[in-house]
Amino acid sequence: MIKFDPSLYFITDSSKYTEEEFLYRVEEALNGGVTLMQLREKEKSTREYIELANKVHNISKKYNVPLIIDDRVDVALAIDAEGVHVGASDMPVATARKLMGSEKIVGATAKTVPWAKEVYEQGADYLGVGAIFPTTTKVKTVLTSVDTLRDICNAVPIPANAIGGLNKENIHVLKGVPIAGICVVSAIMKADSPQQAALELKNKAKELNIIK
Image (cartoon, rainbow, N blue to C red; front, side, top):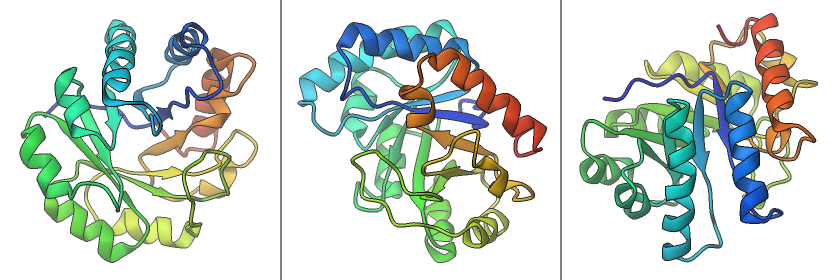
């Protein structure tokens, strides 16, 4: 399987930007030290998703950062992305793994210990756990306590990342929890300088020993 570093996991949101501005922001984030990136598109047609994914993949490859496609195994396969991420209402992890093959990354969302164990057994390579805080993205969020996050980290041997409303002002709540990294959307995507935001977030997480 492709090796990946989930410490600073950036999830995109193109909804408020022209394509040019969006791609600029993606590259800025990668310049700032993003280690893993997910392209998340809820509104685009399959053709539009594939076209944008190809452009984003061309950028991420320059930085040797794996690109994960949200939800859509077909899009991930179409552009030969490094992986796919499936939520609880998406395709089952076992099916995604079968279609993607053993060499690709398959991530899953988990909010409870039993579900974390279930998706691990189905072949997930990492978990996104949250939302820790309310988010401004269009995704419906159910809050997950830091205690549950800790329990999930301790229950499965694969990397677990915290997600949901995280930024450099509030990530201190994760101190001492054995997460593999943090997932952020708005903290980087909406920043005046995505590069600076990514750099500051990474430095703060390291300072708190949240990531190595």
